[in-house]
Image 1 (cartoon, helix red, strand yellow):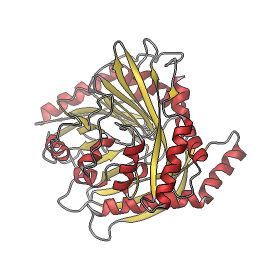
Image 2 (cartoon, rainbow, N blue to C red):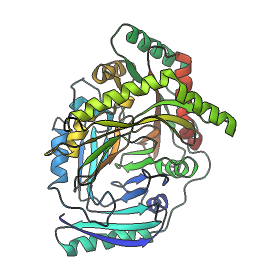
Image 3 (tube, one colour):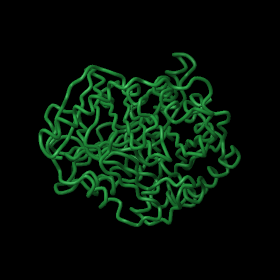
Image 4 (spheres, helix red, strand yellow):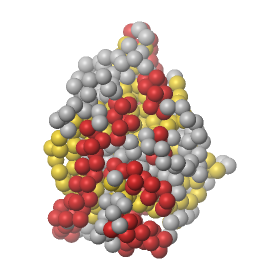
Amino acid sequence: MRHVAIEPRPWRAPAEVLSAFRAEAGTCAFLSGGEGPRARWSYVLRNPDQALRLARDDRRDAFAELEALLGERCEPHPDGPPFQGGVAGLAAYELGDRVEALGLKAHADGWPDLGVYRYPALLAFDHHERRVLAVGRGADAAAANARAQAAAAWLDAPAIPAAPGRLTAGFTAETDAARYEEAVAEVVQRIHDGEIFQANIARVWGGAMARDTGPYDLLARLVGESPAPFAGWLHLGDLALVSNSPERFVTVAGRDFRIETRPIKGTRPRGADAAEDRALAAELLASDKDRAENLMIVDLMRNDLARVSPAGSVVTPELFAVESFANVHHLVSTVTARLAPGLTAVDLLRAAFPPGSVTGAPKVQAMKVIAGLEPPRGPYCGSLFWAGVDGAFDSSVLIRTATFARRGNGWRVEARAGAGIVADSDPLAERLETEAKIAALKRALT
């Protein structure tokens, strides 16, 4: 896929374009909220030419298989978007078992550790300039042009409206409140015993989708009601996911292959009015507990990035920034680095996966604690990512994410929300934090 062609087209909303292909296996989308420098581009992908799906018991080297699927590195188009074709899809949380052998079990719905497709064509949506770029890649210029024109034709498909009303008759906690608080108390004790410094412990919610509704109906509501910079969609046929994530995992960009990660640690709900909202944001910024929790993950991510970066290139340009979303305020820090010569974004994925902000510190021992307290996570706390054939890469942390599995003629939905547990965590407060984090998904479903 050495040649790339770009076809500019008038603006259409990416979620609206995706709606026409909502039932199509192999579709993938990255749906930015469209505000700020990190939320400029959205992508809609379909018609992959290859697929890679590694189940929990498939012991092939997932990272070597991913490199092989990407193939030889090619130059990007100078006027094109950051993603110009390549591989996109899911790295589930259990992919981490292929980095450190922890004996993690398979998710009950059969989610693969790695479920990705290779896309020779895509639509890129520029929220800042309100334009769409159809991108095609091929062995020669004619093949690239043909694929770009075929992708541009996706814009002609009529939108399909989302279902009205309740999407599920019941979306209830499958980890009850008392059991979760007991788990938090156990983690606090393990921290006092010196086993770990921090662990992210989650609760599970679930239910059956209403008749004639499906994953896209939830995506449409979330995009409309609580847009997030790293929202996403993936349809594997028998499985699908909808994410409304606010968090970037890692990205690689530019000719010098700059790395950036932006871990989130620290949360407050939005206020009922402007004064309360400001007070909650100020409280988060001033919280010694939340700052300490955030700093632990910053240190962990710095260590992960140092494995694939030249000495001295890992820096932290921003600590403890408050970022506000539709339902919560978050404390966010930024760590940057540079990919070492001869290494690729896949090497970075192997070095840093799973995201430190949703595991704990030390990461390996925290993952062992999580495995003893939670059922297998599947996509939750994994990553939805794209890897360009030119070496570029971007990825989200799959929080605020719902997963779907077919049950007969309908779908079952599952979602999780967690909290970072530290030495002075209060079990009730941490449980209430999970309920604040699940609120947007629960509201959209019910």
